[in-house]
Structure formats: C-alpha cells, structure tokens
Image (cartoon, rainbow, N blue to C red; front, side, top):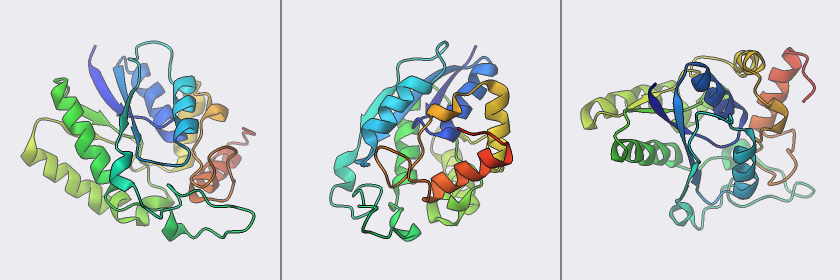
Amino acid sequence: MSVALLLASGGFDSTTLAFWLRAKGETIVPVFFDYGQHCVETEWNTLLDVLPRDGIEPPLRVDISDIFRGSRSRLVVEPDLWSEDVQPSELYIPYRTLLFFSASAAIAQTRELTEVYCGFINSNHAKELDCSSAFFNSLDALSDNVGPVRFVLPFRDKTKAEVAIIARQLGVPIGRTFSCQVSSDIPCGACPNCVDRLDALAALELDV
C-alpha cells in the first residue's frame, strides 16, 4: 500500500479525490492550507467531517496566512453580499496555487513521499493564470528538474459534472462538502464555485 499526500480543503473536488484514492488502496496524508481565507474555520471543520474514516492520517494544517496579510482579495476579505457586488477578478490571489504546490512538495519530500495529489479540475477557473493547462504543464516540467516529487491531478481534464458522477459512485458525502468562495457560513449559490457545483448536481438530479 502506497502513501499519497493530498491537498485537501473540504470542498467537492478534493473530497471526491480522497475517496477515489482510498478506493485505490492509497493511504492519505491530507494537507490543509490556512492562507487567511475568511472561511478557514468552516473549511477546516468541514474537512474533518467529510474525509474517509479509514486509511487516512490526521490532517496537517499549515498556516501561511501571514504571506497574504493585507490582501484585498474577496477570498480573504469577506464581502457583505447584501450591499457589495463581487466580481470574478476579485476571487483571485496571485501565486497562491504555486505556493500550495511548492509547500506541499517540500512536505512530501520531507516525509519521503513522492506524489502530491490535487483535485483541480477543468472548470471556470481554468482562465486564471495559475489554474490553466499551461500553468499545470509548466509545473510538471519544473518538478522534473527540481526533485523526486510529482504532482498528480487525476481530474484535471474532467468537468464538475463528471467528478459528481465519480462522487456518487464512491459514496462521497456531497451535501456536507463546502466550496463557496465569498461566504464563510452558508454557500452563496452565485460565486463560480457554487455555480459549478449546482450545475453539476443539477445534471445528476441531485438535491444536495
């Protein structure tokens, strides 16, 4: 049985990937990044609730919030949805994804692990610089020249609806996952993550 480090957030995609890895017999080391996001405690508590119950180590919570202190991103500064209109461009933090991957690779190599798994998918975030195919292709090339750790994104070419099918097959607690970008409590239903999720579940005729 091999061991895989998993970037985990309590969201739909990373939770589905956790169940997918367990179905393959992998032991999972979940890593959760606190980057100062306003919904950090909701994400953390959700993560603890939705992960598979066996074959998994206690999640490692890594605090990198000082790096993004002062950011005006709406991922960090929670908007008042009654009075503020949030634009997609405000739901972005430069270098965040690159930081996640470099830090997780360092953690993996420290623990003598060789694979970092991530649930990024082909969604509306693909237009963001650090969520595009070009970015991930460059990341693969970079890791080839730096060390033994490899990044594995099994869902990178899938849609949210396709991931939802996998989630249903694996018995993922879809309704308990949390992916909202602008609300720290109740999902807003309007941010890109919420729209992706609702569209995918509607395609499956799931009411969760």
